[in-house]
Amino acid sequence: MFSSDSDWGQKACHGSVDDMLDAENKRLAENLATKVSRLKSLAYDIDREADDQNEYLDSMDSNFLSATGLLSGSVKRFSTMVRSGRDNRRILCYVSVGLVLVFFLLYYMVSRIQR
Image (cartoon, rainbow, N blue to C red; front, side):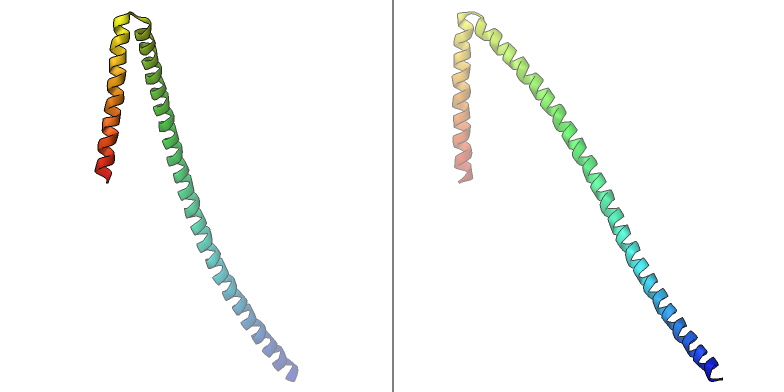
């Protein structure tokens, strides 16, 4: 009779250890599921940010291309004006000096406003 009582005690002890291990496994599984969910959210945020940055870079590329086209057209017109007659060169000098003066005037005004 004693041996059967001891078997029952071992089974009860073994059952409680199994229950404890099962509860620990469930807790760890829930913890892992939470971490996986967080990682999934971070991966989604990184993907969305990468897409936004790619769109931004594409728009910068198109802006640089349009600026390049604008500058090349301006250089062609400037070269044509310089190669043309003497009157155009005089006008070009006046416009250049005027633009430099306007630049310095604006610089002076902005520096006074910021003080």
